[in-house]
Length: 155
Image (cartoon, rainbow, N blue to C red; front, side, top):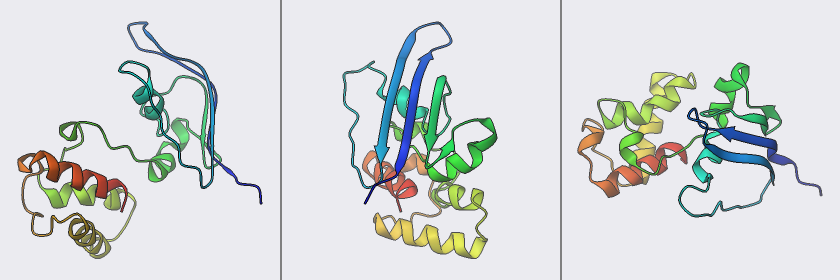
């Protein structure tokens, strides 16, 4: 049985606005059911590469996710399929309460509020944060923030 391509990158290059090169002519594919790790020293371009998977950054070349090209016209659907959890939780938090922040994704996917409430309850219970719905996400401990962010994107 032949596996399908989940991620396909062809000739991807990227320069930061100040001209600093970050990626040069990257070709990469990940097939269905493969597990991969992206390793390298600080400044090697790991995060820059991953930011291309959901269109946070767009360089020269092509990036395709599950057969869908990452381009301006497909960003909404791409971002339904690819979520990123930032290394620093403070970069990820932007809503006033834990409930609002966890509900952000499901609401933007068009789920009805009743379904969103169920999903938020389930997600918070899974990471041991049930009862934290009304708290400010900025007042969680570092460990609580990381548990919550992981569940937010990988329910």
